[in-house]
Image 1 (cartoon, rainbow, N blue to C red):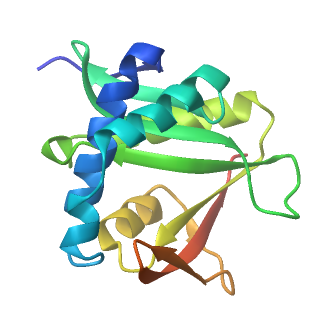
Image 2: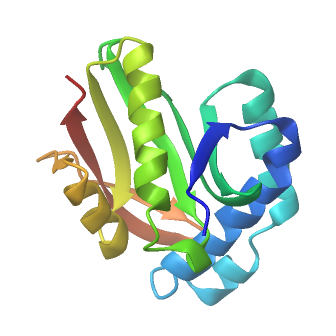
Length: 172
C-alpha cells in the first residue's frame, strides 16, 4: 500500500470532501443524533459548502489521499471564538472516511494542519468536540490536546441538544 499524502484541496475535491463529511457524520454520530437527522444529510449541500470554503480559502482545506483516492480532510484557520488572540488557530473540521479509520489518516491531517497553522504564526490551536464523541476525544487526547475547563456549551443539531467542549494545545 502506498503512503498517505496530503495536499491543499481543489474545487474538484469538493464532492469527495462532502461524501466523506456525510459518511463520517453518519457513522461517528450514530446513537448521538437521531437516525432521521443523519439520514437527511445531503452530500449536495455539503458539496456547496466545501466548494465555497475552498474557493474563499476560509478555512484552509487539506485532503489526505492515496493514489488520488480521498481518505479524509481537515479545515483550519484562525480561531472563530470571540476574544481569542490572532495567534490562536482552530481546527474547524476534521473527518476521515470510516473505511479508512485507524490507518494514520487523522494523524497525517493533524500534522498538515499543525504545520499550516504554525506557518500562519499561530502559537496555540483549539477545536470543539462533542462530549459523547469518544473516538474523536481519544484521538485529540493522543495528539496532545487538553480539555478546556469551563468551556462546555450546548449546541442544537437537527433538533437534538449536544454538549460540546473546547480542546486546546500549544503549537510551540
